[in-house]
Length: 347
Image 1: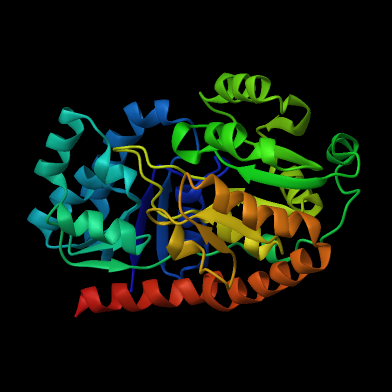
Image 2: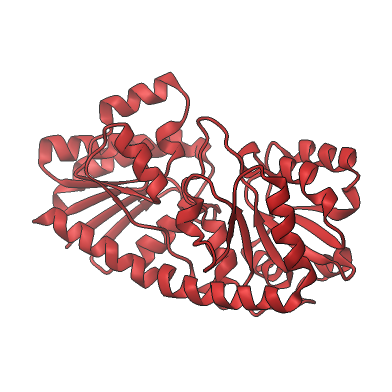
């Protein structure tokens, strides 16, 4: 089976879509070809027409063409309609719900495939509500480097200095409204004692988080670490005590899966996350984390307080979560599902 992968989200850029593209394209058995964009999305202006042209010229060489997200659908349109190639498209949630009339018109014209692969049950429901069919859910895998994290302090000198003996809560991802950091700083952090809340990532909510920390009197308990290298990210995860994913609902801007939650679980961290959108596909309540209703500050405080006070329980939950994640989300298991799905397309 010869497969052509096309993705506009690829390392060294970081994110859930990048994790999926890299894990899938590197782990999938040969023969395969990958056309990828690992740069800023500003480069789409040339990458998209390049991908369309290259696929049109080489499509006959492949049994299956896989598109990394819905925005790339035009690249599979001609090969599928005119050349009879089998096309599979991964969908992630936001690539289907993005609120732009022009973009939605584009999807209406060109989003056609023999199989749509959703990254969560939540995304599958969104896809089916848009009339896409057939849709199958295959989750995102976790890279081996997260399972290899050795837990313990003193792996990042700056983190250790800023923590000063406090329990470290960490959140990873773009600083955008749906990630819930502003809400968490306003409504949960002031009720927790002896903690440092570390936010790893950059984004438009940076100044709002700083303002929320100042107004809630928690500036001393918040560290905005910014964007970091892969190596330092692993060191920060190793030195942290609890992973928090306090997402809130934002219309038109959904969390398709929540890859950072299972990466944290694979690193041996206890996970506390919102029961929202695609996150429950990543976090199985009581197995590799605890799920809390979004914006329920009392529930968040109760769960986190118990973990902050009990180091042994943090260790127990972290070890259980790592084992569960290894069993269900290691890349070889995910690749098996893709191989089976693509093989069915050839029948």
